[in-house]
Image (tube, rainbow, N blue to C red; front, side, top):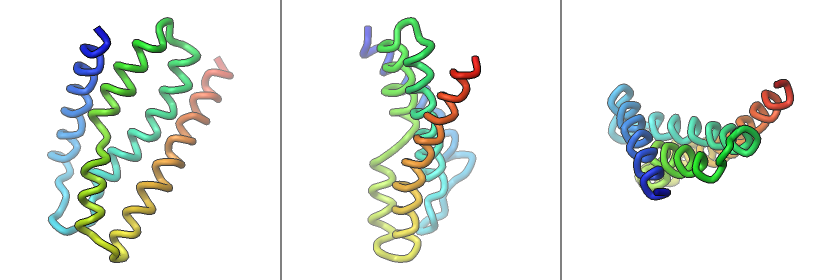
Length: 123
């Protein structure tokens, strides 16, 4: 049953990521804003969901599998980040993309956890 939760969640996440790419197509050789956007949103969401699920879910393992491994696993993309980084190379854009993804992802996840903690404390 767990694999089915991950598969269904992954389908939702993958379709959402495809929707972002269709709505905001990257320019060839340009800064990969769509991939950066989904990875930062996914980092924020996983931080928020981790705290929220731990505190509020009756079945945290099942909920975590669906949302974190499934939906967010399908939505975010390390492989596209790696490819786009190598295509940009050690240029200013490439190094900016690396820094924005790594530092931004860490900060977004931390912010998600912080906000979830505040929300749970309030209510």
